[in-house]
Length: 419
Image 1 (cartoon, rainbow, N blue to C red):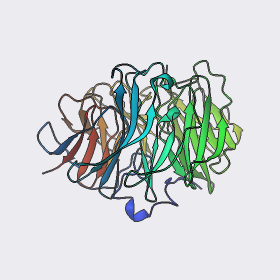
Image 2: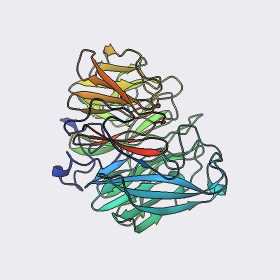
Image 3: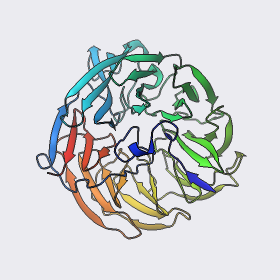
């Protein structure tokens, strides 16, 4: 039997799954939202409960636990905001979900310009990885600058800055929590590896070096964890290959090759296959049977499709269907088992970077310019409506609670709730 699993199975009670959004892409890390009555329309004034200015800049997505929202940001302390070599304060923030009030704002690391990336992509930044909340702790990750554990009041429990590597265009991969280990990918311009830290102490548990010879070796994908034949696999895409690892030891279980780099989409699973995108330059979506060992490229890749393959937004699997969002703003639905295309959207949205969510059989897709299109889930195409906020760049993925959407823009966080 092959099935997907949540990554918080041993850490968070199942009763919290419906109300909280504790990590990138939600409770199970797959874009599914088990909440009710999300708003179907809003604009700059309608159904905006509050708008809270966020200091600094960052594209980490909001997470929500017990009525509190957690974000990361980077604030310039010396130099110019436009310069990647400015000194910055890398910070974690906590806001009241009900009011939008900042409850605490804590510096995690001071980033000296000399150790900052030489260049930052326009869709990246110094605070792109999303925080993770579990067991009464907040875990924040700033890529090559380090990882830290905080209390829910913002006090630092531990930090680890030992995994320094040279990034390309900044950092992007968010951490996941598996069996007491905080796991994340570090695919820089010269080194490419996956690391696991002990969540209790921050000490290095293991490090897996990718056996890649990719000409462009960098990537930014957040890993996923799945149960395959009763055992956990951490599936981590990198440049030119995806690796499945044992979460306890870091030992490789299987790998599959493709041509691609700057990987961003987070893997999803369903109907016995794992689905990944090869990203740049010519993206492909691969459906991979995860029951093999060693190199499974020729034996366990069950289908490959190029049309409507995403470079940045993650995919969603639901009820035998795979939903895809392209970087140019098109939405498509494929039969997950075979890859057969079932429908494609009209051109409603512009460029997209955020990952979609699925709630109450509705697909919410956010573009980079504050517009969100809603589609009916299913084998037939149906556009349900479009809403937007005004004059705000939107690259972060949304978080949700019952009846409520939390949307991060370039300078502010919005609470969207039907009145």
